[in-house]
Length: 76
Image 1 (cartoon, rainbow, N blue to C red):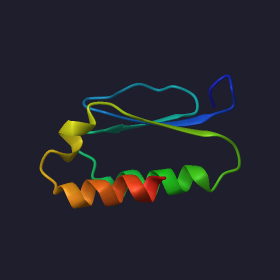
Image 2: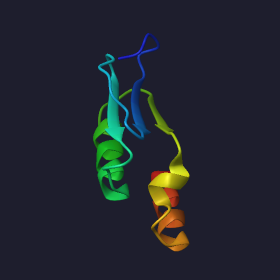
Image 3: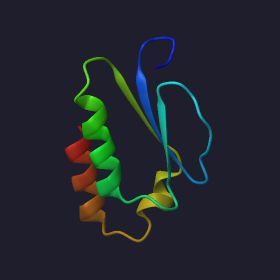
Image 4: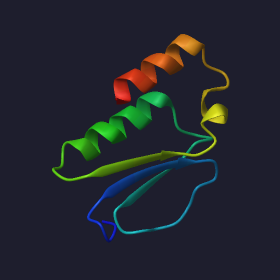
């Protein structure tokens, strides 16, 4: 967990590292469904959760706009 007690999901191209409370997914290899699954897992645990998607345009560049909008709406 971070100092604030927050669990964080970081999605970034080539992301690596081992930080307490931070789950890291490589944006080059992950799908929106996998991101949603990880978000759901983190939200099932009481306490604050942060989501950081770096270079999101790369993550979604091969997906239709409607799919992106649905993904973001589902996250909210």
